Image 1 (cartoon, rainbow, N blue to C red):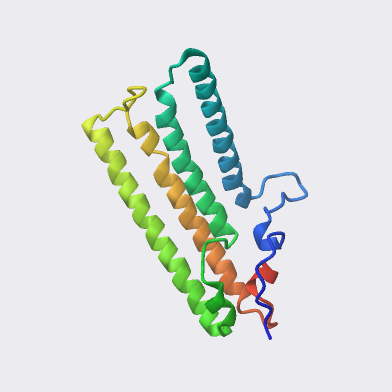
Image 2 (cartoon, one colour):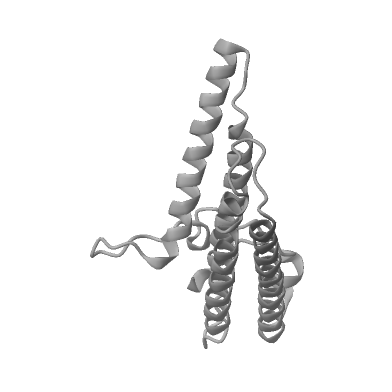
Length: 187
């Protein structure tokens, strides 16, 4: 009988991948670093804005537009981390009770839906960025071209697509192992 307890967050699937012994960063860690840098920048921008507002009763207008962009970048970096670690939401009740064949089908279905969504998001962000560039839209806070922010989002969305594909293929390969270990034990 299968144990249906909640997943332990210290399991390998939920821990950050470790750097190889040679000291070089593994490819899987880049999204973690992007997320950490963006989060630090968000905290610093917000801290500066709060301190200035406290002492001057005025706020920097530019902090909001940069914070919104950084939150979007953080969301996409977090999506890449979740894809690489198989951390996206799913209904475990059905997945854990499924046969290995149905599990592989569910992995394919989940992977294809995620790929379709992030590919569509990439296309829409490219179109939005192109329109912003074509019409010369500028931001209200800083007055810089809006596409300066938008240009970074499609590559981040494509990064999620790549991570989803690689993690999905790895899960599919591990689900075919001859022993009956779950994909969480293999990863």
